[in-house]
Length: 233
Image (cartoon, rainbow, N blue to C red):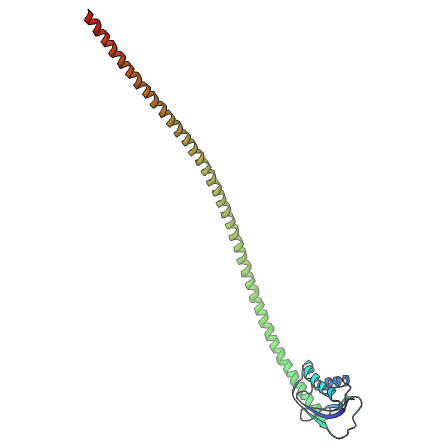
């Protein structure tokens, strides 16, 4: 069986004039907590509530987790159990605290907010001017980039033409090398033919020498015959 307890809770921080009480009311109702929430003149938000201890604990936890959603900030939570019996409203509600002093304070907050909006508007205008200047600079930079790209394309075209000429030169060199090889082949054939002719000439010279030797021998025999004939006469 759950034990129901009553508590006084004080919450310090940026919790007034920001919708924080609405957040407290919604969470408390979802957790079936009884009581009320109100703004105190010391700038805090105070809660008088009753319910199961775990539910009250969850209330504080969810307020810490969700306060930033409404722009609030919790600096400190003071929780005190009420030992005596308190008849609390069965449905949790936000108590109205909009007296004249409270209304004046809220008006002061509203004026400060408007002044902040005006300052932010001026800063926004300055920021827009700077953005326009930055966009102009960006446009100029893009123009320079486009010109650079055009020059790069022209350079690439020139490079392509140069590569084509190099390829043509390489083709001509290959053709020249082929012709040189053919010429070397022809020269080799001519040298071979020359060597064969020289060999034939040497053979002919050898045969001529043999013939001369035979002629000399024949002349010598003729001389011997003539000498023999002369002796007999």
